[in-house]
Image (cartoon, rainbow, N blue to C red):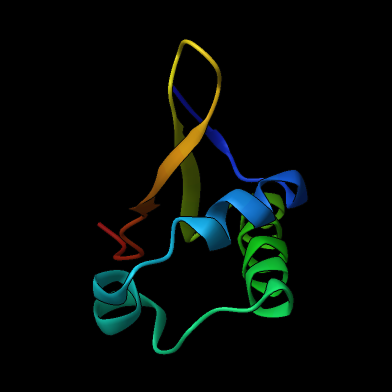
Length: 78
């Protein structure tokens, strides 16, 4: 399942951090404060209608957060 992240996801998001995530995506080891700031930032992008929409990837059985995925809108005018 996919749905937007909420602040209730912060602890699970932080718990899922590993060395590869830090190396390639995060830019540093996360803290409760940095994860909460990240979630607030992605919530603001939802409110602003982009350009990035971040979804929590969840198990259908128990709604556990198992990852995230971003959708980035192309801002090029056609």
